Image 1 (cartoon, rainbow, N blue to C red):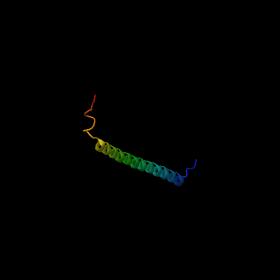
Image 2 (tube, rainbow, N blue to C red; image 1 turned 135 degrees about the vertical axis):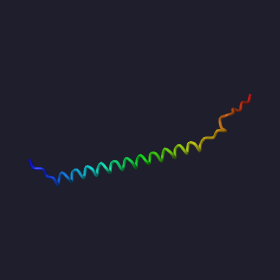
Image 3 (cartoon, rainbow, N blue to C red; image 1 turned 90 degrees about the vertical axis):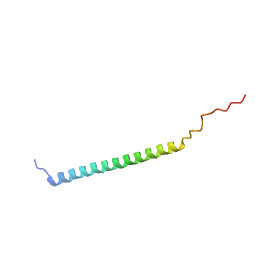
Image 4 (cartoon, one colour; image 1 turned 60 degrees about the horizontal axis):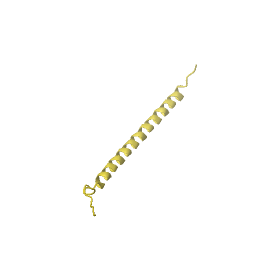
Length: 60
């Protein structure tokens, strides 16, 4: 059985590159999701108006 060492090396290198690219993309997506979550929380905190809804005006 003959092994093609250069081809095997290239294949393994390609696999490692694809793995590294996948991890990088995952990290970027995670950072973006974290950033968007923080912005959403900040937006929700700014939209709270504690003076509203505490009183009901009733007229008979």
